[in-house]
Figure 1 (cartoon, rainbow, N blue to C red):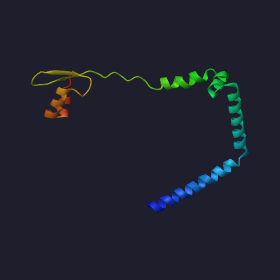
Figure 2 (figure 1 turned 180 degrees about the vertical axis):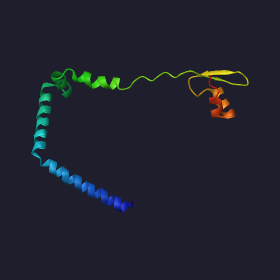
Figure 3 (figure 1 turned 90 degrees about the vertical axis):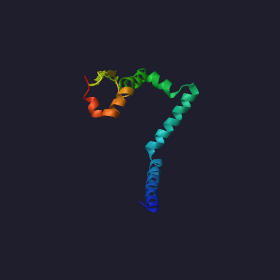
Figure 4 (figure 1 turned 135 degrees about the vertical axis):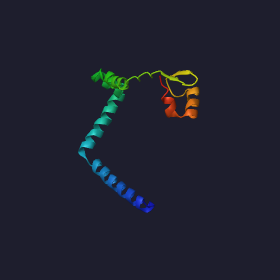
Length: 121
């Protein structure tokens, strides 16, 4: 897309968003919400409370519900299995849980990954 077309498309989106913003500004529902929020914040400031204090007063369990699911979302990882590779010629055995073993890498470079994987015992 050329820069001019991109500019015009963005200009149209901006005009549409500005029109939507103007429509929201005239909304009586929005005016009521803004008025409520300003009065609430003034009242909280007058008594020295924060929004968190009010939430804790109205719903003491809210803090526990918000933090509990986050901790249980992630299940622990399964432990890796130990793999044993036995070199058929030398009889040398390598035990590893991952593929980042120096000797195993050398074998794979020398004999090929498929061949070395066939040495699993």
